Figure 1 (cartoon, rainbow, N blue to C red):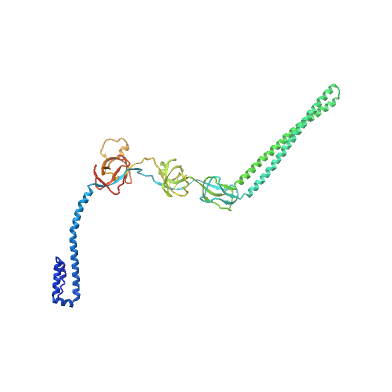
Figure 2: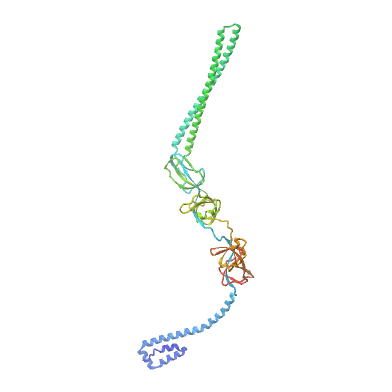
Length: 480
């Protein structure tokens, strides 16, 4: 057999394709080799495939060798330019100094309710004939809302008015009696005057002896009788006047009854006691209402209240009239300023929470009842410049100093170094500033002095900085 299995491995080790082709041609010229090719076709077929693979492998190696110098040259040409582009500037993250409150007050959740809620109730008994409004409708004070059946009340009013007319006629009769009595008094007075004149004349005649004494005595008796009749007539006038006064009193009383009947009948017309919005409808037309029966609930939404539960530990920080900030989830982009109007004197015995009422304006009328409100009790703390603690490169603490401090506030102060970014002819540089540090919270620190709002400062850098170093702003830096 002329097949040598080691030959393909030798072909892969040859330095170039020329040597491989010479060996293959020499084998093809061999006569015995040709005979074996026909006798063992499967072996020679595998050899042909192996030869083709060898050619492809040599081609790839040649291409790889040819491209490597070019890539190396490109890499060498790009390397210096990349270094030159950095320019030695330190990359930094820059932020703009702003004022804020370091420790924000916690938010308390509550629910909006009307500033006041009034129940519209029936003042008389009657069947509800109809309602002109429904839940959510706006009503004005004095607006007609519904009507009760007034048949019975109208009957009572008519009876009272009839009784009043009867009493008025009685007063008229009594007044007429007074007039008659006064006429009788006048008649009796005239009779008395006449009798007294006759008596005096008879007395003169008796003295002259013209008439008997008995005749003069009769004249005196008639004068006395006329005087008694005058007194009786005068007393009768007083009696009749008292009757008139009594009748007039009954008329006045009946007039009050009539006015009451009219007022009760007016109660059958339901009117809104306040300006607001109907929040609840308690009954429906057709139902029989008793005196005091509830018909509607009307809420006053000119202002809105929010009730929040405050811990007893934080009660000392809340005062009546204190300003608060309220946010509604229904209007997330709007912050409303309100005030504390009431602090409950009694706390919940279990949770130790105290209800606090906050009122907010609602001039637009767009704030309804039952909305989720978030209340933040505003403090009088002045806002200071706040920066991340990573912006402080170093701190200087006078731990070993034996000199006494001027005050407690000065003893609590700390100093540090912060780098401010400045532009000089288009090149960004940093300037070291000594700053006085205040309170720390949430990985932030207050700057009491040394940094002004609007200054650009380094939050973090790629390496430690020194005063005057050139820097390069990162893409996440804030722009002025």
